[in-house]
Image 1 (cartoon, rainbow, N blue to C red):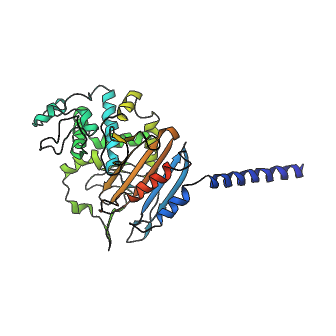
Image 2 (tube, helix red, strand yellow):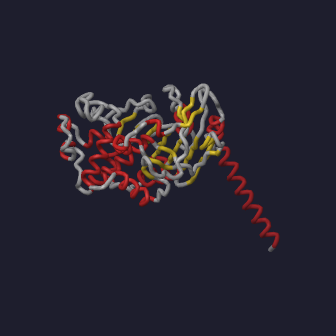
Image 3 (tube, helix red, strand yellow):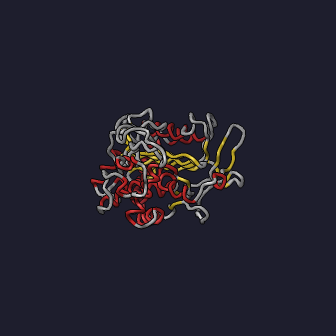
Amino acid sequence: MKSLCKFLIILCLLRVEGNAVYAQQNDDYSAKIDSLMLTTSPRIFNGVVLITQNGTTKYAKAHGYSNFETKTPISLKDNFRIQSNSKQITAVLILQEVEKGKIDLHSPIRKYLPDLKQAWTDTVTVHHLLNMSSGVMGVDTTLRFKPGTNFYYSNPGYGLLGRILEKVTGETLINKANKLFRKLGMKNSYCYEIGKANPGLINGYSVSDTAITVLDFKSLNMTQEAWKDFIPTGGMISTAKDLNIWDGKLHKGKILKAASYQAMMTSDIKDNMEVFSSETASYGYGVDVNEKKPIRYIGHAGRGIGFVSLKFYVPEKDLDVIIWENLYNPNAKIIYHFEKVIREIVLNSVLVR
């Protein structure tokens, strides 16, 4: 009996070791990402990468510092400014009100913001604001083009969506977003508020050829009113793990009804943003949707106030990739260097094939 038990234990260990070797042999992405993080040209990487598939963590690593002055190591638990990844959260909040019948996607925005005097509020719809086809360059300027005919990445447009949400619900966007985060179990996500405690938020840095400098938010001289309009477009805070929760629940029907989700992910407005401009991508509601090369994926990038990010989800493979940095290089050619390279490594790896 003892001999049999010993044999079974050895057999189990061999199976475990064999499976581990098999997994290592078929992991053609981890070593590449590890090596990439150590490079210093064209710039350095300072941030976190989280990759999950079918609910299992495939890669999770933090590299660098959350605080360069104290040399505090960065962590997957740290809070980052998610910048323009905030837009898809705003889009979801709008769609939830559409589901309640409080907002009509194809109604002119004058219906919800009658105090705005611009003539274009009679032609720009909620739909146009959501998929960046409104042509809105600023609340007090003329339109860039006829609504619905082209793509223009409009932060002011998402500021208007925040105003619409507050008008129809009688509640602040901050409260609506924070309540949604709590409901989804995103315990470390919230809207940044000027002059209030913003727990867990790490420093954002700008980097040049000669120095790494902490970005002082106060130096931006942002007014309360201007920041209120910026929150729906880029003012939310989260962690890599919380955004992984968001992606899983959004893309698996846990937040929106099927029709709303389909509307969010469908667009014929071609995207010309720097991260996706080389792709066959369209802009949905707060998300980029790439239908080709080499597989369909949905994502968004974000940058500014010392942070850079890219996250994307591959529905066919239940694959989620989140890349977060708290180091911002203003050189347009290399802002998203690591994000682009990691995306290519993943999309050409065993995780997708």
